[in-house]
Image 1 (tube, rainbow, N blue to C red):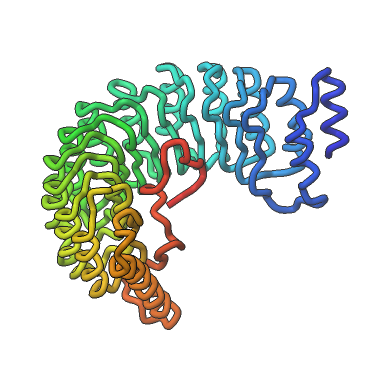
Image 2: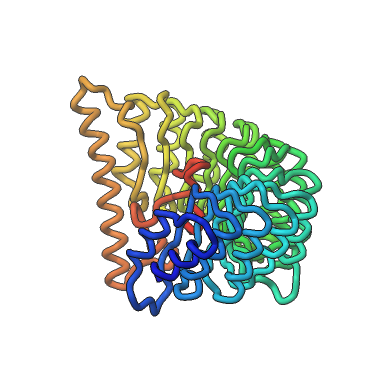
Length: 422
């Protein structure tokens, strides 16, 4: 394969790519199964370079192809899509940061019928290019596409409405990433329609937008709709950094109380403060909701916020992950309250706290911090023991702690690795 690649490059009058040669050398001699990933990230891939890569794709299939930031033009994109179609080269394709592809190239890419995941973040999707994507999403038969990254493609207003209309009857797409699209409160009406009409999407990522309290209210209104409560598949919602305040938490709490499908909620990097936690309490105490994971990272929590939350955690048996990092206002009183709650709680297997809330000179507080980690391990072990013995409650999540990290809470936008599922 390496000889064929080098010979083709020589015939085309182009230089070989060192990273490609290294990857070829690492491939097993007899590739009977799909290999994990083939990456040319950051390389400059012309149409001629793409032709040379066919020597690999005609022999080996991959789970994922990474063409991030490879300066693809229409001719290179069309050549790639033809290979994907003919050889079924990959199930996941990352084309992020390729801004030179126009509607001609995108139209061919969108026709690929073997792709389960497509990453288009930071690309230049024109209105015509988006229309081509929408035609595929609402086409018959439906594409197998289950995960779509559309971060930072100016997908707001009319363009967002076009996407929502295309997904109305789509029953295949499971994950939709719409972060960094400058969504405003008015776009909440389009997201309302998405949640009302689409019953297949399981994870909706809206991080780093400007939806505000009014936009979130529309989303929560849809989540509370009786038809949505019956039919929705949405289990994870990411609202990180959306200028949401405490005023939006009444709607969020009501949605959590009425919609038992929601299991993961990230509302981190929003200025919620003490009043925000207070307004969330109806959904966090007494097992009223079915929430398993909540992200409250960098939400301006203080000691009183932590005390209010601890009162809920003490009698909650559904939460398994709580993220309280980057809240420097949580001090000794907050830590004590969380320690007391975790002594009683039997479900949380991961409680993220900053060590900065420990007084360096106070050994008691250091012990409380270590105790909290111990209580989490205790809970994790107990659940695993029940699962192994076959006595676990049907409502207990089958994966806990580090085995099921809340990626929606942890990942920053530039770490949203395509293909990583919930």
